[in-house]
Image (cartoon, rainbow, N blue to C red; front, side, top):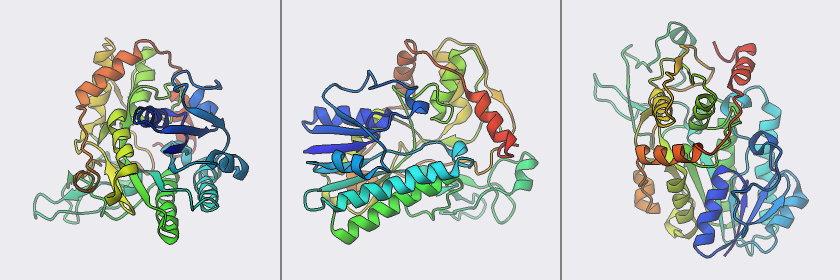
Length: 372
């Protein structure tokens, strides 16, 4: 097939391109080469020469139309990414993400007789808090709201139940109610729902994939709004302490990009996935402070993270994937252990340079009252 990846010159998109090329597909990428991500460079050196790169904005009907000519399937990955930044660049994020998705869909509909599959990148951020159980009552499947301001100000970090005691995190299933707590998360929920609704209405097979915390080679090390593994790496490579909010014991599901794109490739060819939404994660919870210490040790840096005991508006405490649906219908199960994936990431980091812009990003949040 001839496949278009919007955002295909980016971190995840380029890895997916490698995977699809290896499977014998022709790949085209549409990407705006955002300077915040690509540093103002032209075509990234890591992008396979077999990928046909078209530079353009997903909000530009003409650019998207050209990119879709002759295409059989579309992966829509293009997005403005970053939870914190989305909370004060509301118009830009909503324009790129919501209008961009709308333009892609309208241009797809002009060619709906030839488009055989749509796959859209969603995000675990749309859940808000993850899923919990009450260890005192045995109740599970609890979907709490955001932690109260008064609780966070008192540095009581864990999510509390109605009885006032702490809840325990459990794997977050696709059926959990969505409670996005940032502009970026709202945008991603809209991404998912727009694609599934339009795909169903027009009979175009469509799959939504909720990415958990993805790490690996090619992450933008100078972008302070990228994944936490890359942010910590840029700090450590510049001899500075990683900044860890709250007490560092909050957990996420860290997924190697090579596993993730294998799941994305399966969504293209698995008919049972059509019309469905899937978590793509490992099902394993890893604390933020553990990530910081693992990277520091791997880089040979005797630098402890700085536990700032501040909190950011909209931050959640725990969220990791329930992977059962992806295993059953998509045939996907993550295979790369956190320790092995981190070892490969650290080997790649040895040849990289990173500009540490974390302090300025943090100052922007503090100035707006979003970190306190």
